[in-house]
Image (cartoon, rainbow, N blue to C red; front, side, top):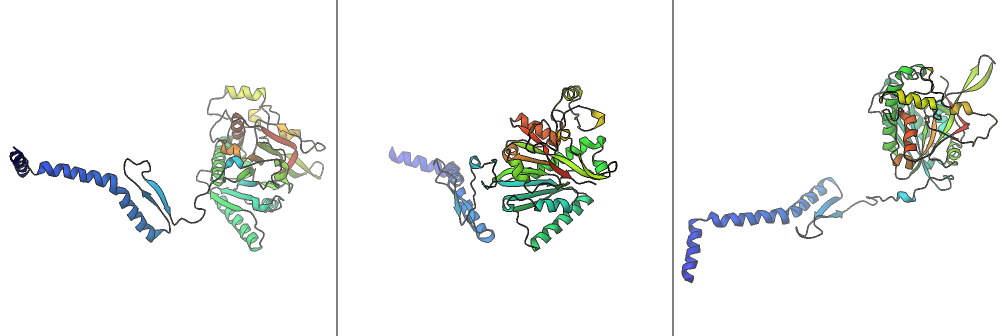
Length: 377
């Protein structure tokens, strides 16, 4: 019986050799798939690493059923290749300079004003703790502004006066107004499109340049040509999540024949009953634009609360802000507060940002008696 059984299987294999070849081939394929893929990828990546890079990521597998399958092995990595940041230890306090808190100053720029650059360099906050970020429209004016700023940077560097921690120059990947003259850009009919474009530029700028070490973000318009050297310390001293200075403008009064000042930015405001009524009457895709007779909201405007004899530290709770000189705790942006390029509660750009910050639980304030000055075109 034994001899018969052996002869039976041998004869079966001889008659049908594929019956044995098929399971052997299947086992071989399974072996290659589960046990040889990692070793082959390891050898190939290491050979490429020798040709292209000085370090590589290799994988090591101890088998399909092992818990540490495909664990990463790091080879020949440079120092500080991986950085770890504990944002819970990042502070934004009322005494930022002594705490060595870093400030990111952001400026959308369509025109370069030497007075803006001079004023920026006069800020008394430690420049090694300040990073700068600029974004330029893809227009002829934007091209010219970029060239002029680059020249200013080269001159400052040649004179060994460029001490800022980092400077980032960006070009907009979105549309912008062709004309940036004061008359054209402030025309009522272009406000929705213009401010939508500005919102996109601001979002690109802040989310490209903010770093894990940024404690504060100072939005400073390219037209702001005069501030106190202690601007950052003064605003941060209030320790508010969002705080706006009052933007005024110097001019020559033809009536009195004297130099004088006048309010400029009307986007710092407190909501009114009339404003809420207008908002409720508008279609969802329409916005309220402040400071225009075509849409009278009767909102209390911070620009009109300036008292020349008042305390510069007087605070005023706000519902909307402009972008002239606004100090924001970086965590406000990290938590998602951005500049809506779409109607957000019928608000857009900086005013929409204030609304979004408040919806996230942050307070918004202004300083009616603390003035910064806008360029007079």
